[in-house]
Image 1: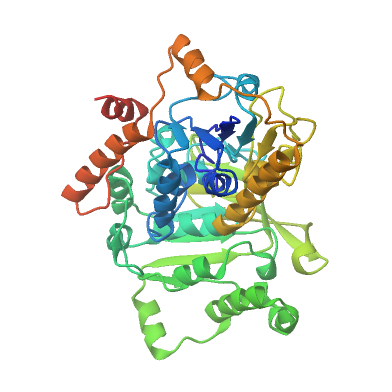
Image 2: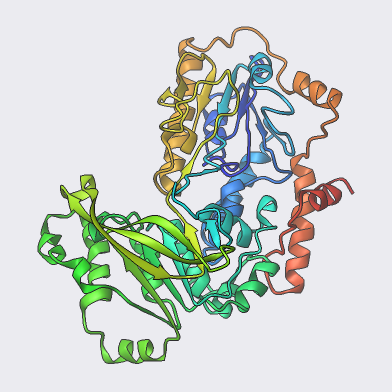
Length: 475
């Protein structure tokens, strides 16, 4: 819900003729405008371009999800909203300086840190975080040097959430599908370097590994169905992983039941004639592997790159969502040349003066109100931790916006005195040699990307470096 959830640092300004809010949220500003006609909102973003997670996190073959950019653009072009790109809050301007300038500051910079596996060998060549891999094929400037080696036959993805399935689908999709989403008959915006690398990929088999069982997977049915129906592929499951699952179906909530039924169908049911014919022609394989945890990434004889992964075999204690994985003492080795860790993200502290809970990797808050920091708010994964889908985070943003508006209306947030807002911040940035990118500057970048994409039959060809973005914006 914060369009900078991968890279942004945002703030919003509010005066009293104008209440100045400094925000890093994309959905919430509309609510501010509707609820308080005196509110002005400034959005600060570390990159020169807006839309963070929608641009750099959503899979390229899900173009329909990116339509929310239209709403974001409507917000950003509101006469009482201003965009300041290429401003690194915490470096170019401090949180304290923003709090002095604005009546309220909302932090919504997401979870850009990776949760490490904490096992030997995870720094070998051939091991990547899902966040960086997704950033690579989606054009995030900081990930363009990744150049993943796709010359191996088998890849192992650790984690079974939607991001893990996105990565598996991109690795196994025929190139025509990566160019054109079949579900929506829309060309995709996957970057040209990624498309070329994936066209040469030797990966034929992807195993998606989770530490618990089929009834605890974190993905949603939409993403699983896309894997089940992915052209040119067939599922490869271990039947024993599903022991007892059929009997437990009747007690599951409807969404979990439907998801589990789809897994059971892919794993255990004999396919119909048409589906069997499709599977017989498949050249690529994917599979879910349950009750496994990584304990070591295995190196090749030269100790220079990944050759496999050692997995601990688990059993479950308890049932349902609360079931815990317990080691059995057994291990198994899987040969692979590519390991992608999709075991979660974590937020990072932005400023020593902003409260932060390291264990949960969140800013401590109540309904978005940061504890012991009047006028400071948070939203998105920084508020809740990395959980939920886009709609979850959208509603989370609305809740924070409501808290802020309630505080203004009740007097808990003092907006009785004038605040300088962006006027003083702009002067500070100019003094420090920082030239922000405006939304109209972004529209120059947008136009160039769309022209380049049109020449290739794509919605856009993304600019991949900050330097070129700035060059286009300032032309």
